[in-house]
Length: 477
Image 1 (cartoon, rainbow, N blue to C red):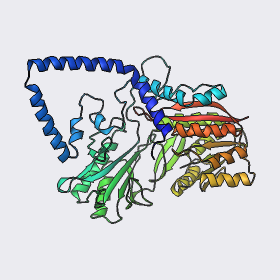
Image 2 (image 1 turned 180 degrees about the vertical axis):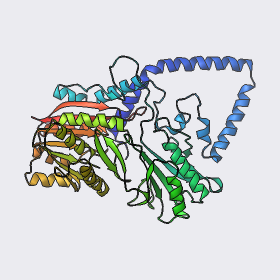
Image 3 (image 1 turned 60 degrees about the horizontal axis):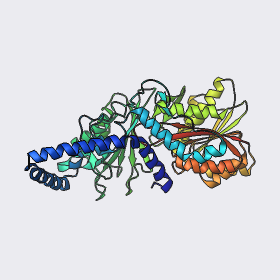
Image 4 (image 1 turned 135 degrees about the vertical axis):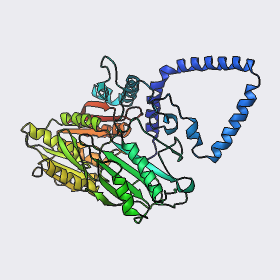
């Protein structure tokens, strides 16, 4: 989804806050470097001609070789050898404390009007293993992404290339390993490319719309050692298909599921509509906050489970559930937030009723299975429906909802949903957001609809990036 003007402004503010204090040092270093180069040129007047010639040679080569520019920016002294080419972790070499401070500043600027209106402040950002303001040494988070993916592209003589797209392009940068992914995930993805080469399964050419293998997604359990692999192909039939699927399953002894997703449509959407299990179990299993969860290949499940537990716990604490409450979990996915909340209440001797709504059928199937796994089938109901349509029906029927949990996609919620939410008059609303810009917009409507903002807490789900998630807690006035 394209960035809105407000999103671009918030992102620029975050980056400027992080780098502004370093500009002076950088400028001084640059000047010193230029002075030193100037002295060197004075001693060796022929060096400029040599450099120009070398530069021209490199320039010509970069036009012929689509991965040459990636090779040029490899830096073996960096925390990641391809950091400059990949562009995924733009702040990987910045101290974590400075990263958190920059995100905190950006969130305070974004929510300034709301905080002034409500007489509150943005809570200190919750990082991985630390809260901004804590004394002592801050960690350098690594290996926290439990989901890894790769596109595939054809190389010379039937080669299958994989890795990350180079920043600002669709040229693939080879990735031997990724410091922010869980160890072993990237090796599986690279192994898939090798097996496809061996079996002459051609990679998909997105320009010519030829070839078969498009993407692969690896998801690794956090509290379990289970791994699920999803192979995305342009069509269902593959040469040597069964041998390929078995070879993929043999890449790691912890792989419990291999799925094939068929996506023949043009565009950059990874998943298509058809998915089938080609090896092993229908789902992989993981745990969050003491609950068991089955995750199917296309259902949503958070990438950083350590911070997910923190994110969910903040929301659950904000719900302030009472005996007999009706909790509605909108945009519920696999039911993780609602079921964790219901289980936490049950452990305290508090009985509630959980209503979950999600239009992804695979997600609802997972949610119902997860309710059974956690012994909550008698108190949890999950409906496959659009969240806005469902809450409008609930409001029209004057049904009771005491606590509403919202976790919408990046686009935020809809005006109609928020109007219906205010009409239902739940005692508490918790709003988890992966896009604080659209959350800020939505919160204004909820405040106008009779709610007050009790707290807003940033959570660093993806260190080394400019991405921040937030949990807002609201109470009926």
